[in-house]
Length: 197
Image (cartoon, rainbow, N blue to C red; front, side, top):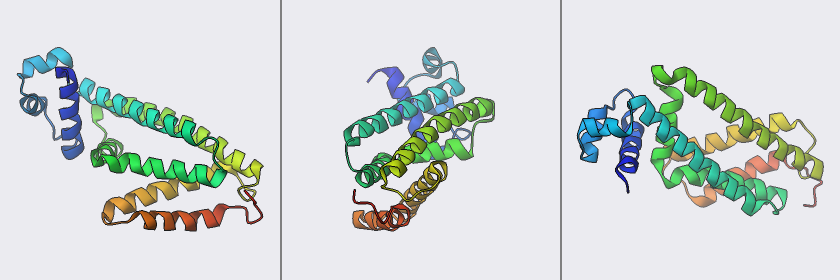
């Protein structure tokens, strides 16, 4: 691991645990085992380091979701949607600090980066929302879902998925079969009862 990668790893851990405001560049340098001046040779400041970590995480998430999309594209619609839901939750549970970092980002944005992050998040969400809406529209057209508004269905799916993730974070002992049970209740509400898929 290069020094720059180690700085980002330590920075990620500390930002996730303590938040942006409570983490200093001096603390990061000490944890990495370098002098503060050496840290600034890699990153001009805390803002630049935070953004580098944020962009690495979004790229990692995109790669994970793109890989999943490719792997499940030929599944029947219910299996496809469930696999998407399951992989999303697993991605965050594989490393709890991912969700900690994103929660810090969403609720406690650095003032100096507020506008920049808001703009990027809005653009990112718009693109991702559009992909979900296309997926639900395809489900409606295939007859797997009852007729409805794809945009509203996509929004409901995201609310359900985020709710399950948050519930799991609050209830560490949740078992895999319980996650499946919650899915079954959700799917029962949106599926087309006449579907043979």
